[in-house]
Length: 237
Image (cartoon, helix red, strand yellow):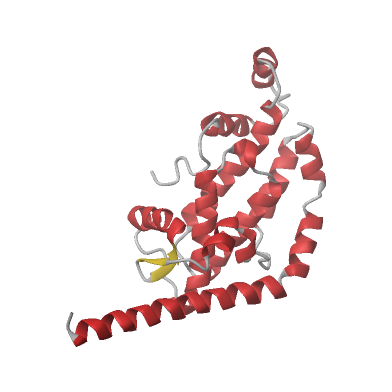
């Protein structure tokens, strides 16, 4: 092997090590400084909406109230420690996808995002270095959508995904597709909570009593669409 090749490999190894170090430092900083916010966020999740949906008592007002929460441009409390995949993989090997280095298990979803929507960071004025933590959090949220189904999520999880998506929107990432998809998931979630445990006859009554639906019909429709499927279904069409 030539000296030039050796120098190139050494430089690449140093670059990869520096990248991992920087991401670890970012993670550790967020973990320390964001713990009080995470505790507050957990406390706030115990809302009337959560209580109502838990018992299948959901109406149009309840659903729209939660959709408004998803639309709200509130200060984000999301950090790396909110995603198990990041806690487990940040100290491991990284892979380049586009302009960013991401944990290996995020690489497939990052590639799907790139293939489906091109460079989502093209509209951002941030440097790649500054944008990378937000990009990784966004990919982690989409990865969870790809891994989970309706019976595995709750309002707290949906709000976490909102924060990851809003972070990306705030940096002018081209991710409108993600927030629109999140609205669909939210409606499906409430439809699922109403449908859960009901017999076929009870469901027919839910759908056919004019003006007396327990939940908006689009929620039931979305719940049926996502039934038994990953929550990323339809996102990459």
